[in-house]
Amino acid sequence: MTGIYLDNNATTRVDPEVLAEMLPLFTQDFGNPSSMHGFGAAVGGKIEWARKQVQALLGAAHDSEVVFTSGGTESDNTAILSALEAYPKKKSIVTSVVEHPAVLALCDYLEKKRGYTVHRIAVDGKGDLDIDAYKAALSEDVAIVSIMWANNETGTIFPIEELAVLAKAVGAVFHTDAVQAVGKIPMKLADSAVDMLSLSGHKLHAPKGIGALYVKRGLRFRPMLRGGHQERSRRAGTENAPGIVGLGAAAQLALVHMQDENTRVKALRDKLEAAILEAVPNCFVTGNPANRLPNTANVAFEYIEGEAILLLLNEHGIAASSGSACTSGSLEPSHVMRAMGVPYTAAHGATRFSLSRETTEAEIDRVIAVVPGIIERLRSLSPYWAGAGAAPKAFAPTYA
Ligand code: PLP
Image 1: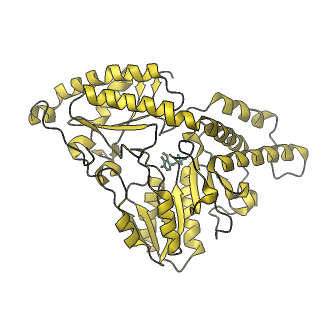
Image 2: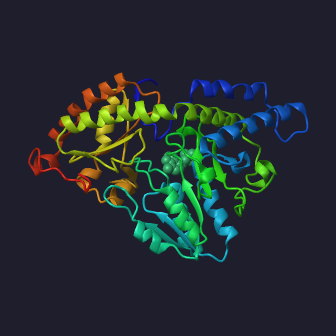
Image 3: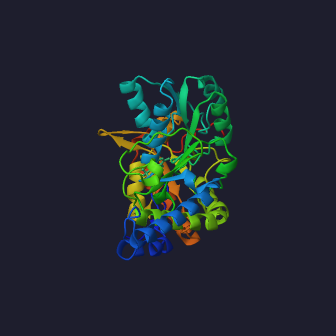
């Protein structure tokens, strides 16, 4: 499949250098790392090399703080369930309304089926967390706080260090879902109050089905998967050695390219947004424009459906993503757009363009060239647009 791929927050292409590091693990270095022979030892050494690369990317103090998992969802579930088991007397959880379902669905389950109290902290129109509500929710009954580092839909970054320090002050474990942030913004967990952090390989040019959970040394930890002694008994199961080595190689590359993401990619993203805002009436950028991931642009186009935009973009060979999720046949705007109070007329047209270090200026220029025509065409067919009177007064986001 070729085309212009601007859906890197959904998944990224495996970097050919990553693949090259992985391939020998399938045919040559195929041993089981737990085996007491050379075949096993060769693989064990590569896994430890990969652990060090992830440690470096996170700025963690010890490589043993990195536990390999199957991805972001497993890491999120493991972190939350571990804290609840380690602190059985504490019955409250603090999270935010804009988390990924990997956290929200587990919290819903824990609330409904296990009797936990879940505090879901609200966000404002920019997607920033209500810090006063967060402080008010913290108490000694809180076993774990789980707040994402950066939002997958808007890219908005939360003040993780400040939140972690506040959580630690009441004795809660602090976990962050950093699946979208790792590899895009610098981290130094060695100097941080963060106890646990989730990351996922396929968001940073490693394959799907591999991820890691950072667990600070000394933290009380209870495994979710029991069985063998892999990962120091913190995650049982024969290691996904090719995936782990792929993640290690991807972490190494991410560290090298971090500057690139923050400058070249951000400049391309800003160019795309500015051009769209200039050429298209009645649209606005969602999220906090001053504090976002450098690769993410989420533009809400009023009076049209995101799905229709995606279909027409796809006809031009452009892959983007909609803020809406199709739930049981009815098209509801995403929980993130609703939480930010984006009006329905705009939330439905929210479209996410997520870039990567592979994105070129020529690709962005092509997207800039086709988007205005697509929006105009859809609006000419939209009863809402006609009903509102063509070019109605635009919704003004709270940060405008
Ligand atoms: N958390 C966030 C913020 C994500 O964006 C994603 C993936 O979209 C996940 C968790 C889940 O990660 P994985 O696909 O590795 O299970």
